[in-house]
Length: 89
Image (cartoon, rainbow, N blue to C red; front, side, top):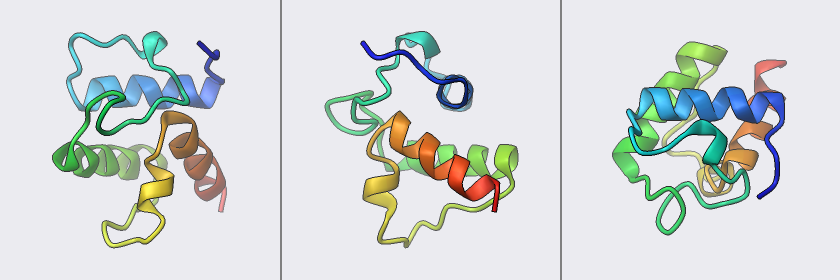
């Protein structure tokens, strides 16, 4: 399994904490695995909760109607890259 960058690890910790993923360790999340469906098995409610947690932590909003959401939420690595790009802006 690929190792996590510092930003990915921070996001994995936020994901586990904000979604109360009791059976998942942040270190065990594959950064390239899908967050939804076959990967972590998250659903649309999880996406809303995660978006709120990201907004609070990083200070920018993820729009629910964005056409990029499928790409942004594809994996931990994709979401982390999106956050890094936008939190600096």
